[in-house]
Length: 61
Image (cartoon, rainbow, N blue to C red; front, side, top):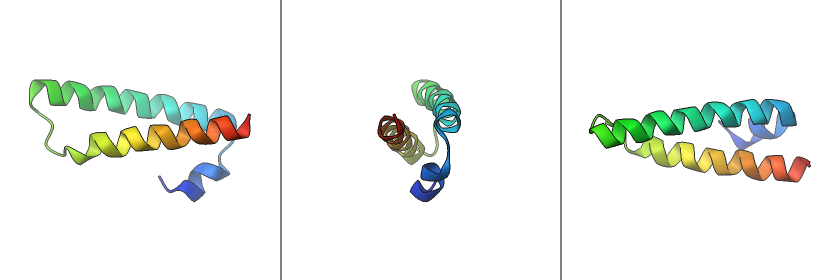
């Protein structure tokens, strides 16, 4: 998701998005562990987006 779109969300929406990203990260980690992860760049994208959301949540508080 673009940074502009993330900045427009409220703190509650960001928190919900963070939960979804963490679920996605877990699923990607399980795929990697079982050797089923085809798009290895997705793990990096999700990890960075989690960091962006955490940064925005800190700034909004």
